[in-house]
Image (cartoon, rainbow, N blue to C red; front, side, top):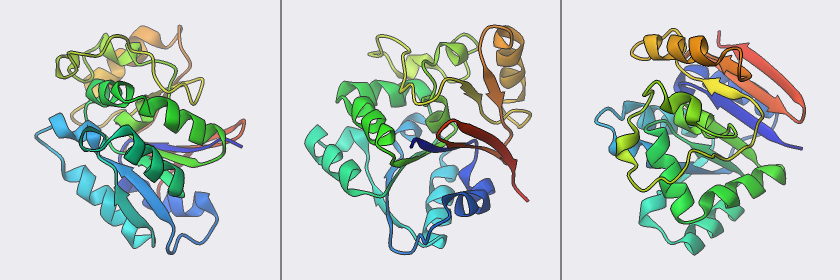
Length: 208
């Protein structure tokens, strides 16, 4: 059964994650992919997310896509209990995942039931493609000069709009909804919300 936890800011909804998992997290390993953040000047959310995972009892194993071989990445992803992808530049993230075929490995693992946690860019790439955020320059695509197309992991059949109503993405999020609300199944979420997917069941939860 496919299981995903999609959010805008993991540190703000970590309590929802712990409740959602419904199992003892102590000693479990999580592959932590911070690659999307490499092009960003603001990266505080990476450390905040990592600390929230460790506080929940997880062993965080960083898997930085640009620094490891496909074989090493594949080995780590197969061995871990969960997969986590941070926020940052969506298009740079996609470029690097596709460069080594890691997008396909992650999709296969999720199809087999491994829990996927996507934060911001990590939530966006769970959609069938990322064209919907390209058109409003949600993230600068110039950071991914070798990205040939916007097809994504296709883990879900909807399109997450992260940071909805939150600075500094407020106007961009509203623009996405304005342009695509009648064309795509959009799910806008604020920094205090998460989308919980369990098989065909999809719920939007608010952090307390």
